[in-house]
Length: 508
Image (tube, rainbow, N blue to C red; front, top):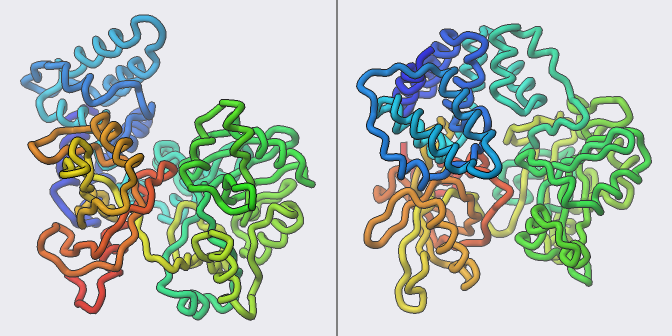
């Protein structure tokens, strides 16, 4: 298969908003790829090389200056091999080696192929938001149930691996995936509820527990071997020694737990989220001593040889209580006074509560209604698209943020508003430095960036507007914090923004 086939498919995907058309385009390409090409097809069209990050950035690619080829001749397998060599380059002279490999590759690429590769390697191609569409396309190409594909992906955590199994081995191969100790699962996600009353009405038989402003963790233990992962499945075991020791001491032989971890103040209140996240990349002993992490577990997916994913939450919670002990997240099962739990959570400095249906299985990687989050302040996680230079006291700083919501059908983020409110001097300095490192282009007033940073925005709903392409605009938006543990694929969708419309008909 030629790279040009993938480029053509990518252009077709960008040209339509029809989910059905996107699925058909992807399924056709998957059916035409051989087994060796499948991983690259899936990876490229979900916005990343098969190797992940390969150590090259926007500026390196922009300075290549390669003249495009007249006719397409690059094979998909050949391109994947070169990118593998670029990613493997290390040591003295590696920067020059990477640049030479990329220059040769771009010289052999047509103009359309160069543009595709540039966007792929700088993270501007879909950013993984096409994941759901790709899963449906894999099911269509392999003629297998979509749920079988989703479950295999939940367990493998890798789209290319899931696609290869589906297309080459069908439903039987997909059924071969199981929970594997030491291989992280995609976390189950929650949906917002308008109020606690609404959430309790929807789930009258439920657990109501604290919603903490911490970092999501998933821990795996097999004997004395322990692994700790973030919500993006990045392993952080080496940075969180106190969590490793704690999990190793739990009363079990093997376990997989889902939870949150926080750094606490001396009086037991949560420190700012950014301080907790700083531990995930630090090995400095003084910081380890100052910011010990406390885990709060809320789900048990495996215990002593028994997988619990398909068991109802009621059963999983019983297993959790047996193993987690004092590290169980605060909450109650079918409480008589859920408002009291919400008040206690807020009084302790947390965000709100979660209301979880006791009959629900663990739907990894899915954002359904089985788990509902209740927060007094309405917030959305949005993607930063650009920032404008400030005025007055903010002269010299990138200030006014351009914000985008995720397109659920895999297109680029859809702009829904701007804000400069809620930014501290520290955040302004960080933004100004960081945005210029991920800059794609600029004009006199605005620096446009790769859509890879997620920021939590507090807002008073949305209003119908023709100013932005989504047909809505944020009302009284204010920055709460950046979310370094989230990818753009985790951002809220344009549908979530439209759901906050106040007293107006939603746009068609």
